[in-house]
Image (cartoon, rainbow, N blue to C red):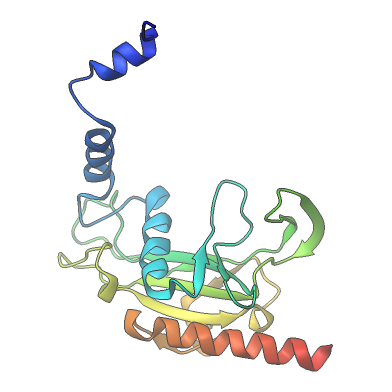
Amino acid sequence: MEANVSDQEYSGSPFTVSDAVSKVTEATFGSPLINNVLRGHLAEAIIALALEPEWEWCSGDYSSWDFQSCSKGTRLEVKQSAAKQSWVLHPDSKPSAPRFDIAERSGRWETDGTFVTEVGRAAQIYIFAYHPISDESADHRHPCQWNFYVTLTSSLPSTKSISLRNLEELSAKCGIAGLARAVNAAEEDVVRASSTSA
């Protein structure tokens, strides 16, 4: 049986799938500063490395939250910002004051693909990741250069966004080494509040 055209083209390719993946990885993550579109994915990957295997990284095209606790089902959403942007070329440019989107949504996508119409925030915990370095040493890929603010959704104001200054009043800053501990403590607070209200 003869191979079809697509098989012939694939088997005759001078490079492999791994080559293509390596090429795009180097193009998107090969420099210290990652553009806004992809930096969120990088921040989630760093957080996944800190939280797995207790938390599942479940963000996707229609996902309404980014991580879910494997044992308790607690939902977590990640928001990120950085002081130094890949598109700012002038070395003397001052970083803008960071703000994070916390707007309530009209509904949420469940894991089975159904959409639930319910105004609110789908996650019970937020991680706000901020990369504060604005000089030439800034490297968005470096886990130790990020600050994390683990915040209960119930503590957030009913606004569409929140500033870093306001976040610092709600939760303590931690580094990558303390992130899992802070998230686990927040999850215990969620479970405790849920059992109290039940």
